[in-house]
Image (spheres, helix red, strand yellow):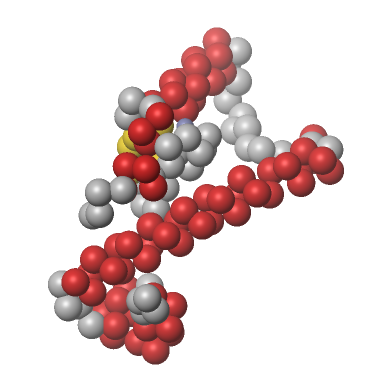
Length: 122
Ligand SMILES: [Zn+2]
């Protein structure tokens, strides 16, 4: 990876740079920082105390339109992050001279679609 990867990687939950937190853990195309993991732990602990067993997901039913509008760019930022990450992984496979055919097959797309989406235009 290039040297600027630490600056490029951001927590998918709070969007902080990996250089601004003490630890970032990678998932498939996404990352989570130690601070968000801590918050998750607190939520789980609080729910354990409340003996709540129902899963709670972000419910737009309970949100105002402004809150929902405020949420959209956060989702879009994660989408960009995942796209960039996927591009990096595909780019790495290309340095190993893995064919567009195999990359496309892995993603359930044709060789042509894979090339069009991930070719390096620069
Ligand atoms: Zn975070």
